[in-house]
Length: 175
Image (cartoon, rainbow, N blue to C red; front, side):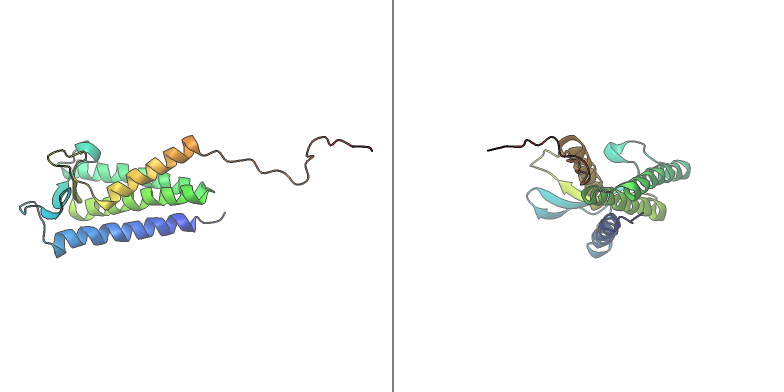
């Protein structure tokens, strides 16, 4: 079995970028729940949110028990993604799975270390906020899943021709 090095490299780079960005927001900019958002552009701010739930505020973990159950659940999902990545032969799918895996590990580390996930990216258009505040790990997980879905629905692999197989009947043309 060949290791999916592209998937592992993608996961590792994403994990480092996610943790560095979170550190930059919390330590570098000193953003916390009491600090106002840091203006970046007319449609993007940096805003600290301690996310104790998962996507869309679901499964809110208010106690240590629910926190660790959430860690176990996301860890089990990450393990499933890792097994899938180890079995995957297509490099593009390995890299998409690496995005999901690196993002999952980044958020799991936050939850283990801090008790919550650090979210900071506030994308908005005027008063319309199409997303909750998120982080690099969340974005990578979403992008990885979208790539996997698009490839599953839109990309068709052409079967390889067996070099020893017959190519079909040929006609003999006589003059």
